[in-house]
Picture (cartoon, rainbow, N blue to C red):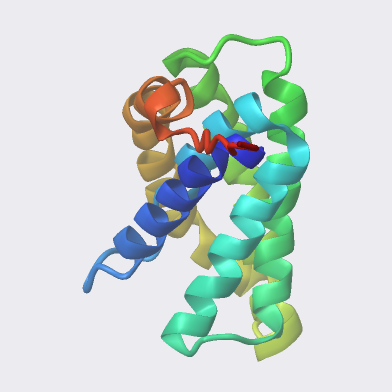
Length: 173
């Protein structure tokens, strides 16, 4: 990862800036679409760190840091761990990215959507469940769309781009 840290930073900053766009629907964001190619190329720990830090830094920047941040960031981090194993023997193509986006989004929304409201805000489980349905539908639309288009582009133009690697050479002369 030493030579690829610029790619990590580019992905991280791009995700943060997109998430900071005013009036953007809260569940239309590129973290999973970026995390999947990173998990394929750099492995579980980098994928975990990318997602975890994306959530934590965003919440710090927007002043929304709370106990839910730990749950949300950890859940996205777990998706990074799982994605690394999923993509280990699969090609980095639109279809594989989309399949993972469907399962990953449902997992993420089930864990976070059915726990944060009831645990931290006194919401009923049935209220959380029925309120989660439209949110998850829009989240699936965004994540699958990004997985089909953005994830393969990130893999091709960022992950595989040797020009974005840090290859500082040191002279001993």
